[in-house]
Image (cartoon, rainbow, N blue to C red; front, side):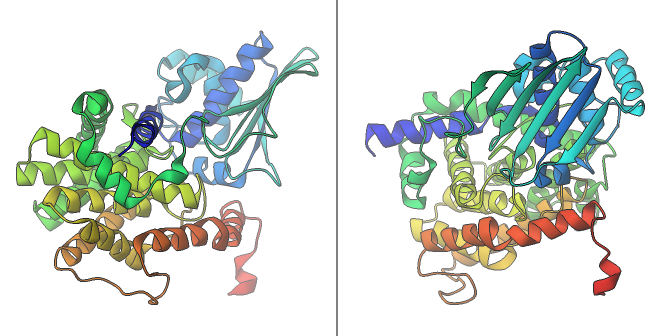
Length: 431
């Protein structure tokens, strides 16, 4: 692998695998509100939020971290405005105190924050406009959760990257150059000192929140239930530990996670199953780290085609990455890793995303289970065949075809999911 491609792949990992506190959509709202307040220079009398449908969808049903169990778009925004640290990006709510929570709850109940659906905007779009005494400050985030594309104060545009903004956070990386073959080559060749900090942090933080989910009663307790009902096989532990991390995270746990593709749930899903199988097979630390490189980059590779937010459940692409990482750890060939990806997508590709909420843990468990079945098929060189549904002649074309479905084919589905969630359609007339 040439040095330029090596650096590109390493920089992708550095960009993607960063810590976040709680579900990334409410955190992004809190971040925008915190930055708008700071830009305004005084405490706002009102806060106006304009949000894309996918942001509304992913904030409506999830507990805002460090909020004392509160939910809602207004809570996320006002909490960020009241006590958020605008310099901490996806850890903006890390310093929230009980006093901040009490004040945010009181202000939200008074209706200081309003929000509306923004039309004809990117799938990930947040505008926070803070107003006080005839002055205003507006901050706009788009495409990625911390990607500020516009800042304006009292009519003066301080930053405007609207035209050149693309679905990436940094022009120094090129996700279009990801391929399964090159990912495996990179994993074989990457120097441990280059990934030590990145991967060790993912293992440490994501394992901790998974254990928190198993030890306590969050959400629907999917992880705990699986461990109780299915026993403690490696398959069960892989599904349960990934689900337990999501149980805790969707339930408002304040512990940070290392994300993948902008999502904590996806970060949990790409990592925990691989960690479980490394323990089961007693592989070396070196092998675990390289397997997590495969898992993370395969997930990012798929999301490049799907997009940051869509009606396509990200647990599928993340679990697909985990299955590929486990196949690599097992000693699988390029062909067998490819078959694991194909077999997973041929099974659960297209699970719909109806927002961030406790049931995400169940979708994660189902997706990981499908990826593990795909792994067992692949090592026997068994797979679904080209022409069967969306399966194409090779793994890259299959990934692209599924990405097209997620980004383009499910666009209308995404709109209708939102319509149902916010009661903009009477489903009885269709049933």
